[in-house]
Image 1 (tube, rainbow, N blue to C red):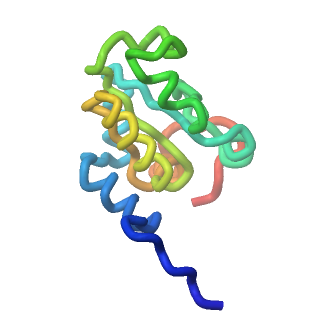
Image 2 (cartoon, one colour):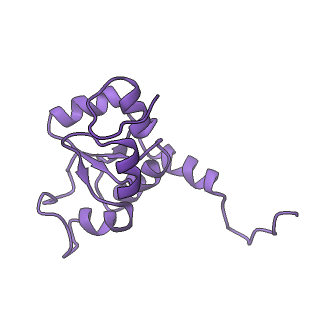
Length: 139
């Protein structure tokens, strides 16, 4: 089966990911932990089933991907209390560091200029021995 003809202007998910990452200064899990210790908000966007299977990062704020922009847009009536401006240091975490890149770029588009994500996601966090609770995946 051949791939359908792409409409003019359409991009692949790989192209979208590359564009998003070109606008981010991504960080590794150790730097993410250091930023979290210095006051950054580590936001875990994985769905509940994935967190239950893999484990969680103690102290991470869980905001599932489907509501992320509403909770972090300083102009949104649905924003979290901690979102009081555009200078919030937000580090986004997903399972492997793909969805988090798209999510962090979306937060940057909202004006949260310090938003970034963790290279390798939760799996990289656990693999370097940073604290996790729950199941915790094997590296």
